[in-house]
Length: 191
Length: 239
Image (cartoon, rainbow over all chains, first blue to last red; front, side):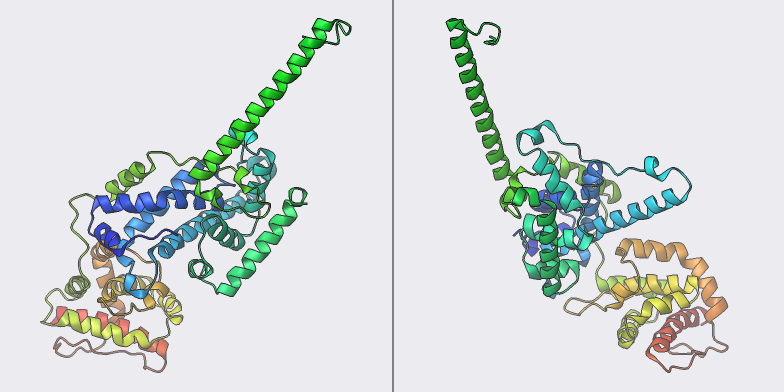
């Protein structure tokens, strides 16, 4: 669990660059990987840009973070990740629909970017890696969010519920359904 | 060495065995390297900290975080936010700025009264506010939204009104002030044209309700508050 002292946030709010760097150092890797898990399957070449956008939004909004309200800074940060990634996915889906309705050959004109395995992938997992990535990518957005935050980022149910703006019970249910779907998709490896 | 070509040659048999040994050693070395790389990857990558589903998730693809990621983010941020930019003004200073915008020559305590007026309006149902915003004419909605975002910024220890979320996309204080400045003339024309009541009494600095809409529901109460702010502004100007 990543947590940053409110003092660092307060310094960042005052414009202290060292504090911005501390926030980046604490969150750049988890945010980068969460963005990758949420949108990277479809837009692998834009993960870095999207992660940068998330940080800019966080930095611009720092004066709205109020520790007095009992919200953890990490929860607040992940809320930005979720909102921005879902916005990106939503916009791209709309773009796809528009494109297909425009009369252009939808099948060949718009292809989601594929996740090409690197040579390293072949050495350390190859096919399974690809299958896991694809299976996660095919989960519905809300299930993928719950799964990524829980299994990759190690957040607790309460925090995920706050980020996803739903109840803890809903988070558990989404996780259960996500794991069921993944087990089904990866059944040849599980059995 | 190809033992198929010379199957009866003892030297070839030996070479074939040697080749098999070499291949086995090579395979073992590759496996060891892969395991080592996997172990190193698992240690470095937080994604791989937990196994799930198959227990073999450590074989997944992880993207490489660019080493200069932080620098790139800060560089972009610096472009937006010059280093010499003043720190964000306090809530009270913001309220005063907005009050000054609404009433160029505000009487003493006007900013506090604007804040108090807004807080009183928090009884309106937050869910209805976006609909009300849409129903009110465009420029007035813009005026209301811009003013709301700035005016309702809570003081420390005061729970922020839910309307800041419900009324529309949150914007930074500097953007809100800039928008207020940019929209000023257009909005004031709209205010004069659409919201100026038939008669305005002497303005004593207290925002007052001079609405043509009867205050019946929570919604109209809030609607009326828009008129009240605009009326207060115009009243000051008239005076």
